[in-house]
Amino acid sequence: MKPVKHKLHVESSEAMSALLGNFDENVNTIAEQTGAEIFVDREDILIGGDDDNSALIAYEVLEKLLEMITSGEGFDKTRIPYYVSLAKDGAVADVEKLSEGVVTITAKGKPVKCKTLGQKKYVEEIASNSIVFGVGPAGTGKTYLAVAAAVSAYKNKQVEKIILTRPAVEAGERLGYLPGDLQSKIDPYLRPLYDALQEMFGLESYQRLMEKGAIEIAPLAYMRGRTLNNAFIILDEAQNATKEQMKMVLTRMGEGSKMIVTGDVTQIDLPAGKTSGLVHATNILRGIKGISVVNFTYKDVVRHPLVMEIIKAYSKDERKDKR
Image (cartoon, rainbow, N blue to C red; front, side, top):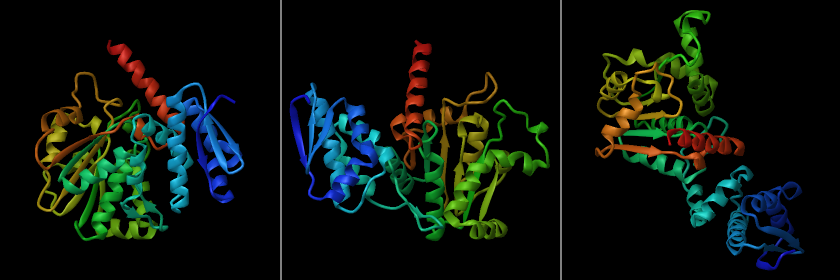
């Protein structure tokens, strides 16, 4: 082994087992992500390597994970690459902020918490602003957390209604060729919203709220001509709204309402020559009091770790094409 640069003492075998993970998968991930060498010697974890900085980063991540274990909080092993990225930025101590606060509780009693600092900022901005734009790649939890915030607001009687909408833009498919009536044709576009709401409320409560009109899910075109009072409005996949549609929906807001607009500007399916309403709106509305724009990055991806790498690779390729 290369010279030992750091040593982490672990008091109990239970804590050591949780820290190492099955077949040492946790420490192996940290070693792979940092380039450090990590070995176990009885009650100590030894960290070495040629690079002092890599060994320090590995030590800081292991130390933080051990703190989480001994406090009874535990950690999600899939988030270890994210913790390493925080340590590389000198911000691993900020992991503690992610344990603060619960957005809502699902029907099965599972607390919905933020998994990244970007998500934490997003939820805080939703709480303190009337309109929030959540912009970033797939898998960052933009829609899921927006629905969680809407459910929380409804349960706390801050709003009387939850309205979820998406532009029914064809992404290489033709709506006319799909079977069924209009509702059947647009359901595939709205399915992620159905799924999130059913998880939060439970199927029976969700169906009851739909029947009484407390939850409304509709294509963006259905918003025209309405004034939406005391409602929590979520416009999802907003990169596919035109400038005209975006202006229309933003001006539907009435008294006591809050609006969250989510989208990924790298996945615009509008016809050539059409400007994305999301791109346009975030450019002209940024800085207005009561409106916040939160930009997610690949670091906020909370799906499979490979998704983060895929997004990084595509972003790099797109930057190369622009140059």
